[in-house]
Image (cartoon, rainbow, N blue to C red; front, side, top):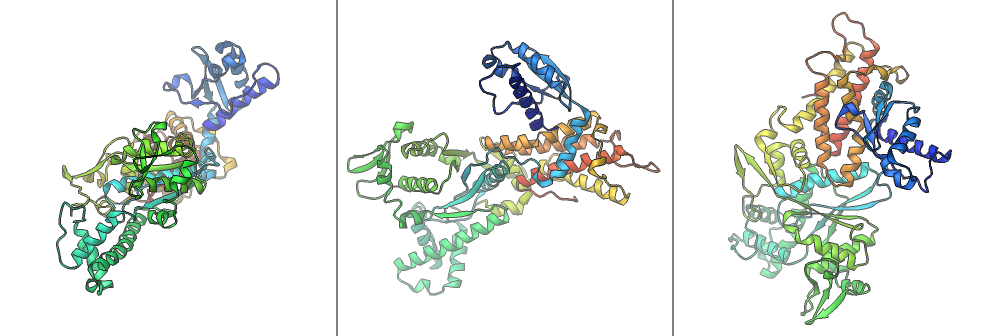
Length: 559
């Protein structure tokens, strides 16, 4: 019995009590919460349903708890019900009910953990969104790992998800990019302090472009800059896309900022937003009164000289997302974009949307890398860029994705190259992957002995009663709820923490004590207990694999 099944059993009990007149409620809640108590002496699960319903039912919580407890004791799979405190119900599962989780997991396979929690949501998930003027760096890498994993989680919880990369291909930085490439192509240094791009990669890009288009340096200067701007943009964007694909980060949409300008969407922003009554003119400029909705200042849409601001493009982009039917629109931005939270929320409100439902802005804190105890320096516009490709080369895709996903994005993060390339329990990704590989090794050994888990109808879940097996089963049963909570709270790291705890429980189950041996040894004949434990082994393997897949990390069969 999974927590979801137990929750449904409690809910069914409430419905039955209402139906036969024992309980009077105008409305029965859609869901009931059951949780693992910290002290296992209090049972396998606990629910506060009596406290939740006491006011609506017009009954003291303890009396209501007694009414429900009498009925729950008769539910198949529930071995006992105790009442604690003011009316908490502590539930003890029957051995067979707990063990059935193993069969459920094996039979569902890759589908186990998935739910319909957010079915009907059409999510636009925008992340990375780097300028196409240079390689993706370490900061982008964090969002590449976390954003992709969040997309997987949301889909696993039932949402439709479109992963989107916003290409910042309009504005002065693109002209500076073209000028920087033209200077390098002509053998000139790029002067500092003028907003140009001085990194060593500029010279490399210029050489590639010249090899393909050797006549560019013979063009007039202005035409050269435009030609290098166009060629450099295409080349750098392709390199970013290749790096992301290598990092297992796929985007459904690559959205060009320039397309908003070309289509007239940016030009039409003021008229569209004026319909909601928050646009005004002052000092010859057109403004959006975002302070009506908590922003720290009003925002200019059109300057007094007629020039559209960058914020006007932000407005056009948000409106375009909503026109495409997305809600919520999730923006995943870097630590230097804190100021965007208020203005984007206010923008949604100014357009007539609900800023608490239709838009979310997540901010990721800085990340750095250390090797041999020394920080590997990062500088975006000089030659000392720690790129996504560097991260892959230094620690590998699996280790990088896992390490970046296992820490809350609210916290700054340090990637220790030495730790993340060590095959030892201290390395969290190795520890979880090793647990999966170990389950595969046991299954291979079982096959060599001619032992399999047998048919589902022959599986006896009541045999899985060792305390360590009960702990392992309880952890496996929590997986669907972990996915739904991690997706709903946008906290990918909860999946990694779950996997590490599960790996610990698995390693503990198969400890050196040998009292939970899966396979017979010597001349021992296979028993039903051996087969039951093979079901639990495969269930553990399935959840480890499914969890790693949600983080975009491989589940190796040998290590």
